[in-house]
Figure 1 (cartoon, rainbow, N blue to C red):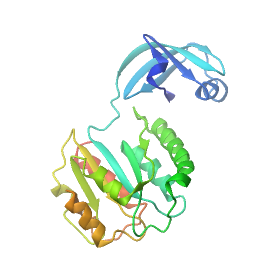
Figure 2: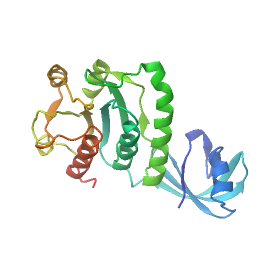
Figure 3: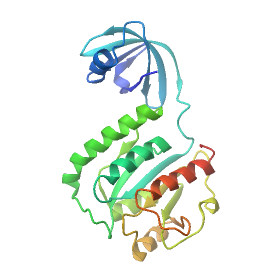
Length: 241
């Protein structure tokens, strides 16, 4: 069933309004008709709806049933990702959303080759948010994961420390993910380096702030592979895969 996301202001009692441009997509691309059923999501709640009216401006729907999305993980995982070269971040965001992350935070670290400033990164963040939206639709998410503004390393460490289980994946080794003690219902932050990994001083700053250094095995993974492996392991250990 087609899935769309709306803000809370578009839900009123048993009625849901889907504004443009999704309205145009529903009527012209999907060629849906009056009476067709559609899933609308808002802040983790899914609404099973029947289409009442269709125009380019809006699609009006009647709510048939609603309930908490069953497709969201019971852990809230934030991925702190050092900015890689090229379009690798596009793929990382797409797959992180599919795997259940609730937030992706791009970070500038010491060994990042790509070093945009915060202002210039905003245009890229618009595209990343669109990628997150489409990935959320495709994978049946109940929320649209957030792509945060570009962070400095110190800002990322501060945010990482707020998680119940802050983790930094270090190419030079650490404990296994299974030894971290991850629990359902918790918030988990996982920090992944760029192509050159982390400097030892950065790892020390993270661990001093309460993070745990975790090893990802004997092989060195690419910066676009490591976050997907880490998220998969986390979801498996917490019973979400």
